[in-house]
Image 1 (cartoon, rainbow over the protein chains, first blue to last red):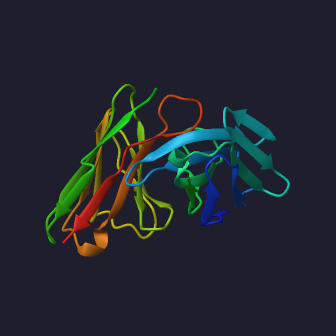
Image 2: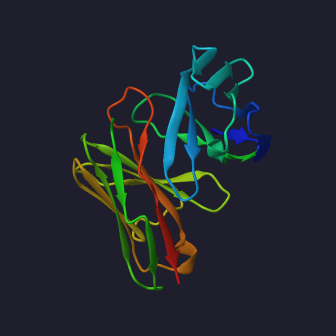
Amino acid sequence: GEDVEQSLFLSVREGDSSVINCTYTDSSSTYLYWYKQEPGAGLQLLTYIFSNMDMKQDQRLTVLLNKKDKHLSLRIADTQTGDSAIYFCAESINSGYSTLTFGKGTMLLVSP
Amino acid sequence: GAVVSQHPSRVICKSGTSVKIECRSLDFQATTMFWYRQFPKQSLMLMATSNEGSKATYEQGVEKDKFLINHASLTLSTLTVTSAHPEDSSFYICSSPGTASYGYTFGSGTRLTVV
């Protein structure tokens, strides 16, 4: 079955880079997403990558995809205290009407 | 962009009562709405998929008589937790594919506490 794994916790200092890793098992995954969840709030889509891409950069966010190893990472440059949140990796086999499979989330704690 | 408005954001109810959670698509027609549940320190778990004008599809292990889902219009989907028990306390989030060719739009979530 489908499975998405993430490390549970990451602590960094303000100004450093953060790298959150994710592995997935479903080779038919077409879309891979990173969501951010602040305490008590819903999920916010940060970025996504198609399975035929290796890398995508969007301002401070860089997503790397190693399809062979089924490994996805999210790098946040110049991490700020406002980046403290839980980050979910998710995958789906198409863009619209299939459900997402989520990892358990990585809690990022940014200290001043 | 597509916005899903979810209400209430927080509710405390007594055991045995029912609670209705609403998700409204504000600027698009949501033909499909996914309902998720999140336990503390765990990931989101899909409960059911609702489609406008038809019966919802429930995931294995989710009691359809317990979690009533109604999707009577293209802009409104509701989840009613019937005869709530403390173990129903959780964070419930709805999500719709929206109008983008990628990604999903999530509601802000409802934290339900049953006492």
